[in-house]
View 1 (cartoon, helix red, strand yellow):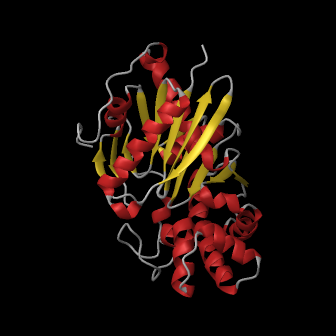
View 2 (view 1 turned 45 degrees about the horizontal axis):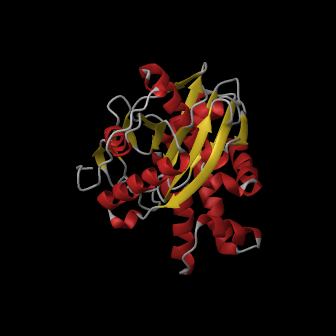
Length: 313
């Protein structure tokens, strides 16, 4: 049997979804924006609606969900997300009841690390740079994690730096994330742009884009150095939206790491082979493992769908 699994990756500005099967790999892919400004309850409603549409579009037999922030994977609960504003959202039960499908949840970056590790036989650190900055380690073939591990985005890179959503100032995430790059450029110029546009302007020689980008890369190098010093991986894989900048990110990042890593060894620093879709692929693979474990992959578990009005989400 070759089931179709749905992998859903909840990000700070969008939800990415794809179909995946053990024999065929990645199938359909799509991405839908969400609006954080609407508040946590509205964001949850948007996510549930996107999952509904994705299930109808995909014909999936099980769902895996990659969730940001602090995640209790055993309880199936998104404990806290500072970027999306929720606390204690029962993701697994909410989506399972909504869709009638077996649902598993996991931490987004850890799922991305698991998906990328299939391409790298040694020890690996996966760094995701998007709305936030996070990391996960795969050591001896296993994702190693506790509730708060991998939060390298909240290492302080600049003591008097910009405020971070966590309450501190100068965090890597407040300087080096895609959201921070866009925000710092907008603050400097008054123009609302995203990180992709900042990268484009950098390539055209925009001096403000250059300053913002160099500062961001320096902050990222600070965090990656810490991860390398502690874990001594064979390879560092960088994914998330900012990795799409390609050589414009990786060339200066490798250059910034070189003097910091003197005496510590120098692992390869590579872009994610799965690109921005690593977390979603990891989520689909989690759905397969969970379905096999509980025996739900071979039967129809559909139940009555419930609306937001029916359930307290």
